[in-house]
Length: 474
Image (cartoon, rainbow, N blue to C red; front, side, top):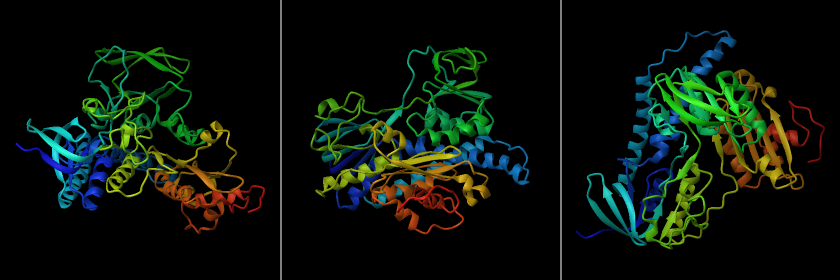
């Protein structure tokens, strides 16, 4: 049988892969998209961003129902139907992935359900879902295979009671007790879900604080809330062993943050990060090179050391975020058509979808300190926001990281309800090299949480209506 041929072969149908495939098709190229699932979507839609946000929304509704007692409205205790909840979550996933499949067909993209291995720099061997193998010859390829959950070696337990993020999102049940290993965004998001659904959740983190790398003033807003919702938060503590028993998993701890030297949990969730999915792709048959951490090395156009092969998304390094992958995919597609393009963002937003949310972009305060860079940080506390008080979320904060000489906005950080939606204005400000005065002079609607960005800029000048600071010249 003659090999299939295509101008662009995209390996991996996640947000980066399908964004690249769709744009390449829109630009007039013949495209073949290879993925193991029946429709595009990747980890993000099937086992990551989307199902987790569906469950986090449920957790937020439960939390607000409980908080409503403070406002004079009392609801009964929530009745959780796990099967119905799981069905609703999977329905959301099905609608989105099915819609992507339809968009794939409308664009006349050749979608192949299977797994691809590079035969060489111009051909793939694809094992289809039916078990057959076929060769796909290509002019250019875009590698977008994503990442997978990292594991903890040598803990001495292999049990269905020990979950990774994929298994945790499958919502097998609501355990009476859950230990979350890892205080990063995945662990805190899933821990928040299970806590809202009724589990007693404990988190163990080896560093001195939750969400390592995130500015501490933002994390403090979330930490205060999590201490109320979680049974325990054990910092500077490690898990040294896991052992299955009839009642669950016995975990042993080391570190002064441990509440007990050992304890039994019904389930354990391991959330210690993700690793690039580069094994078994036949990269040894090409000139594609990996760095010391296993990430594919690429140039600003996302081209690898093999001129015909591009790589995007999680396999190319931090940050491992869907929106970063999507933009890289678009750059790769444009580069293949010969367009002068490069992936050179000034601000990639990051969001932790807990309640409250944390979001940031551009230069963080922590990075400025590490770089010994002179910046001015202007904070607007949500306790001074009328809208935040009406929502019962006055513990948030919005801050701007500003160059004191040029008054340019270098970074934005937000902790509070809806921070993930608000951060887009911060991204635009950083990308457009906006000045603090640009934010200050842009009329924001009242009463909204978005006003906090304008008022943070006013704080910089000492002219915030709702916060007093000594004035400075504009």
